[in-house]
Length: 122
Image 1 (cartoon, rainbow, N blue to C red):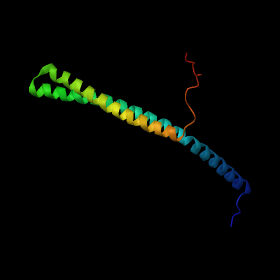
Image 2 (image 1 turned 180 degrees about the horizontal axis):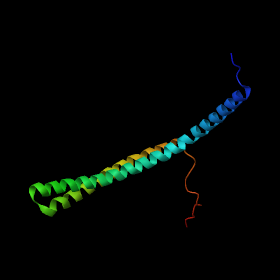
Image 3 (image 1 turned 60 degrees about the horizontal axis):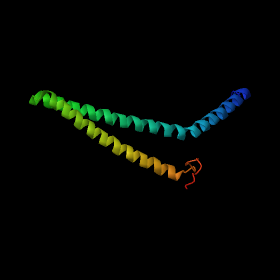
Image 4 (image 1 turned 90 degrees about the vertical axis):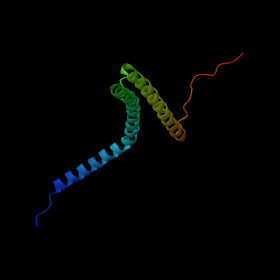
């Protein structure tokens, strides 16, 4: 039966220790990265809702123009309706996201607030 090489065992133990340290460091950075990625995803989702609503309104207006024959007015009306609806959806979703962020901030309050000195009133 062949003997295990002592230097190879030490090298493997050293590699295991370095790998464990690397995984621990990555695990510590994960919450920060996840929070940043969620913020980016929320922003892109709001942008997609805004653009999608306008394009959907334009598409429906074009279809109305094409089949009914109301040349420019279907697209103009569709654009206005799509824009209004998409702005409504974006504001509603942004309000909900803001409320969630405020609730998360209250849970982990860091004592923020204004650092400006209070002004005297005469």
